[in-house]
Amino acid sequence: QQQVKQSPQSLIVQKGGISIINCAYENTAFDYFPWYQQFPGKGPALLIAIRPDVSEKKEGRFTISFNKSAKQFSLHIMDSQPGDSATYFCAASESGAGSYQLTFGKGTKLSVIP
Amino acid sequence: KAGVTQTPRYLIKTRGQQVTLSCSPISGHRSVSWYQQTPGQGLQFLFEYFSETQRNKGNFPGRFSGRQFSNSRSEMNVSTLELGDSALYLCASSLEGRGMHEQYFGPGTRLTVT
Image (cartoon, rainbow over all chains, first blue to last red; front, top):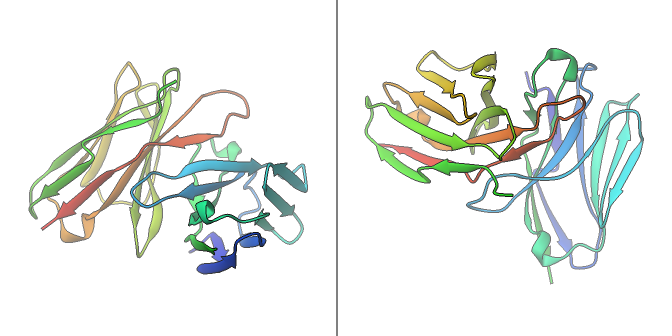
């Protein structure tokens, strides 16, 4: 059972454009939603995270939008740059479970072309 | 502050052998989690340790085991290796505390089973 569904699988964006990646979850007990960025040969790097008590969080060019009723959240990358080309993963965890276990989406490979 | 370190970075083993991977968390982090990353299954949770105790385990066979030492360093072991165990094994550490969910990943150990 895939508890976090991520789309699209791949995304090509022009430099300067907006990249949008979407995730949907099933477990309503999830209360922490991070996004990770992974470059080839590297481990995932924590990019930005949100909790369900806020609908939006912005850090620089990266914004998370969260819709609790729809059980969806998305990552927006403004002014996308070639250096943003990487694989992005959404994830979720449940603090009440007494564990930090992350459930990941399948990932989105982003290519930003000049 | 140094990040999560994992050794070795690359390993080639033969089917039927066993392997031990090592992880040193960020200084001060007491929680360590392990994940397996493959192209087909994505990032999957293996287990989580805190204060030398396993507090959560993913859906993997008993051939996969781990432990944590008093200095928070962790090791995972895979016995009787199978071809399907070829993957990137990632370790993540977390700072234990109220609301502290952030997990920081190491570069991973690339295991190839032939």
